[in-house]
Length: 315
Image (tube, rainbow, N blue to C red; front, top):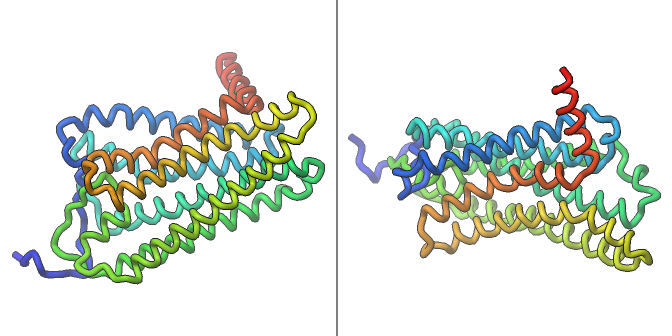
């Protein structure tokens, strides 16, 4: 048998522990996680289907909402099925290639989600601050180009993360004290984590999230300035009502992301199972809440869903 200190290009597979310290209650933890995934899957599928089939929803805000729902579907589906397999069937092994693929999807679609939030903030800014030119500024072709830019950005910044990890030498340890393959967790198993990996990961994180958050905050500051200058109280409330769901969803996503990052980097005194649960919720809660918030707050989507339900009952 090889010594513990020996190295290899990379192991054939890793072993995921699920939630360390709570292995005895994995089956109970799986119940709320499974419920969240079911709500996420059907809720986001309904949003995408409603926007696709209802002509009255063929507008920039709803196109961006369908992009967000598609992103949430991919992001949650890249993590939850394997996590539930660990909880239900004790299927802890994950091949190295599958681990890297999962890592790519998590980083790529987290970046895409952040980019979609920025695009939605810009859409609200144009709709409120320059309503007469909204359809001209954000035409369907412009929305498609924005979506492609967001997708390409996510792929471009995520691929180097995976390639930098693949080239690292790994020790014999294959145990990942986590329920999915996160970059920082897997990198800790490498025998030598080079400075370029750390610098690149932190630079990308701060640039992408930092720039997106900065422009989102700037957009809503400009929106609020215009809203509070409106002469009618009804108009002000209506404008704030259109922004409310966006602000709620954005805050949920970034607060959980920040808390996950801080507990991972500086939360050594926090129990490991708490850090793992928080990291899981970061990938599960926003995708579940997004369709609920937008579905309840958006009259057109509610109408389309009711119409779908009534048609199905009629059949």
